[in-house]
Image 1 (cartoon, rainbow, N blue to C red):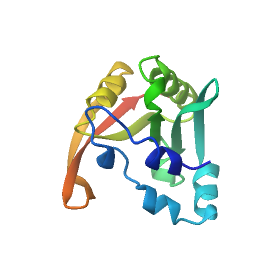
Image 2 (image 1 turned 120 degrees about the vertical axis):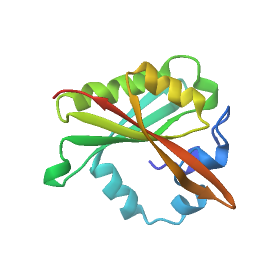
Image 3 (image 1 turned 90 degrees about the horizontal axis):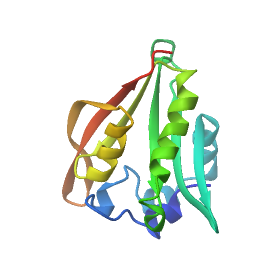
Image 4 (image 1 turned 180 degrees about the horizontal axis):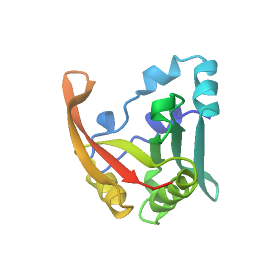
Amino acid sequence: MHRCPGLQGHPPRGSAPASGAFASTFEDERDRPLDWFKELITQSRIFGAVLAPGLVGVVGLRSNADAKLRHKAMIWGMYVRHEARQHGIGERLIDAAVAYASSHVEQLQLAVVTENEAARRLYAKAAFIEYGHQINALKHGERYYDDILMVKFLGA
């Protein structure tokens, strides 16, 4: 599975602009070879939420293979379909990723577009703390988006 349908058919709605919510674009991912996705998936743990009739949310967790960075993992690809929001699915996905990571790494990191207030609240509720601000982290067309860098210390 890859996120092309999520990027194209179900752009994020709300306070974050659809074009700035993901680091990837539909066009980028559409043109990537399947081996690129296979490598990403095999190097990650991916958690999904299913409601009838199907998949409504995902989040990825990727550890670092480098010896000096193995104590950290990165949350990536967090997405809940618009019609499934406000039902605690995002919270459950983050809880699942944190529960898995707790026995494997010491800290979880993530980046979230500054304008995505709902996601920032979700991560803060899960005890992620802001530790940095990356100016012009993403560029879509002529518009730049800043990222807030967040971390959760697990003590594994």
